[in-house]
Image 1 (cartoon, rainbow, N blue to C red):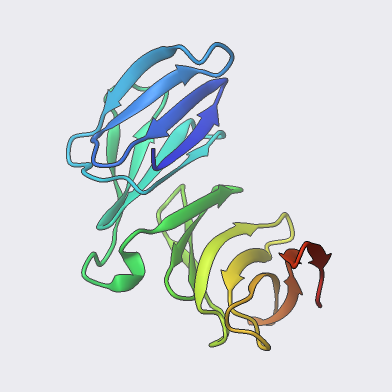
Image 2: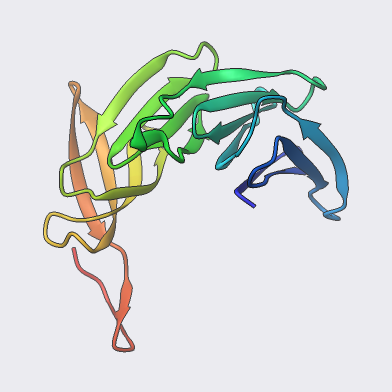
Length: 187
């Protein structure tokens, strides 16, 4: 399994090397349906827009938009440069009709789900080695989980980004980790 998401008490599952999305009842987990997406080859992530009843499914060369309310309605939402290593296995998150596409090693691309416009690109500092995930907050800022801090390139961290006059600042909070049986926290 490569990803799952939920809309209206239905769980949508994207599996490796499959052009089909499986649909399950969110209470009983019985399979309800299969959505075939012709052209989808190898999904690596899936997110849901509950406002529009749409799924967004990422694979190496594209992001697909799939309706959960109109049977058989799907289309490529974005075409990605599949030869670029940064989009080898794109990850996504979705909030407020903004789709975040996480590219490696350290960029977040924000797109409008209503008109496909790229709204902004956030480039994280050089010390960020790999992005694991990112989400948008209600204030329009980003929280990103990543490998690498200004003090330790092998430390996992969470950074909070905010925008003022088009610039961003990063605050790094090291996630708790276990060393020799004890928990430590660094800031």
